[in-house]
Length: 469
Ligand code: HEM
Ligand code: 2DC
Image (cartoon, rainbow, N blue to C red; front, side, top):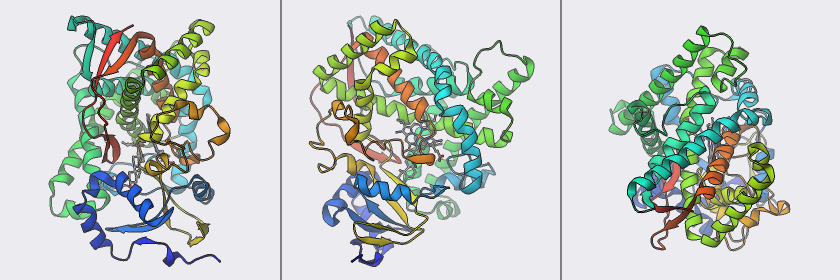
């Protein structure tokens, strides 16, 4: 017989006491490890209440399938209140990330056509390929200047620039110039603001931002300053395109970028377009750059695997004579490597939905309206789901039959990551160009763990050495 909701194991009876022990365990930065620990203690389902935030947590792919079947027509994830509070405070519209219900759906349908449908890939690839080539040229220059035939560095700043240049070129159809020696300080400020925005968000998952705002807490002020910086820079970019669009009406058949396409389509209000383009620009920096950093780290730790990937890329290059769109279809192991990176080092620690119907998971009844979270980080490291989970094995993704609700790094269904195609293409092109030009190496075998700053990040700098082939 099916058991009642209140029988689900876990700590949910005293939210405030739990918040206190969570804080004492430094749970704010260790949410992913706390979740792994909870699954070990309570089993594949547990209920939890920390502060004001009450949820049911699951870990099995089969249960994820049940969850996503119950997400309804307007899938809703946990609201990051810090983000909505900022917009309410500054009187700014919500974009697709923060909208819900019919307003979300109508915006998302139009954005899908310009951002994630297969037809736009042909437009994105040449733009992103150029950025990839420029990145490689930049690394060659750094190596030359070092006078040592190699370059040892913490690549994260370079990768932030690569990611912003990539998403910027797709959104605006023009280059921001971040692969040059002297970059616009405003662009650098934008990058710094995004990191600060994420960092200041995580404590506010548990402490209501409205309260922090009332008491004038520094964390709230920093958060506002970070978003202000993000919106100001995005506004400048958007204004720039808007101006040039009114000057020359016909753009010689050249792809004008996502923003200009949306403006010409004229199906969303300018305010809605601005709100979502700002979110896309902000969402496109730390996510892909950190995933690429983790991938290089894994390839440095697995030199034989690195050679295998290089060989795959060489064959693909040979047989397609440089037709990039074709080449991207011939690199399954490179794609497997990215999936493997997101399995061990997911950007999002969990996926969540408010279910719109009653469901039964692990023989417990869960009522309609409950927030159900899939522990993505924990699932990626569960030996029942992935045999020998500690091993970085891109080849495990080559067999499609065993992927049922296992490859969820970008979320699932109509509410999945809107930037997914941009992210995947940008990351694949990056790896192609890097593998064709450099060998990646690292100093000692030191294990690097993740820390939670709303997204999962490496807890310490990762030093890599790049050598020309
Ligand atoms: C949403 C992951 C890159 C923009 C999401 C979600 C995840 C995710 C897990 C939630 C999906 C769900 O609830 O089912 C990632 C990962 C990335 C990445 C792993 C890179 C490795 C990007 C990029 C952009 C972006 C490059 C922008 C160009 C967004 C937006 C949403 C979103 C706008 C909200 C969509 C909605 O609510 O309708 N992402 N993301 N992401 N992401 Fe990404
Ligand atoms: C963080 O408990 C942990 O893609 C919380 O590009 C639940 C939660 C809710 C929403 C998730 C968030 C977590 C992690 C970061 C995500 C976010 C939805 C979108 C966002 C996954 C798992 C992200 C990084 C977007 C950010 C775009 C923004 C900067 C404009």
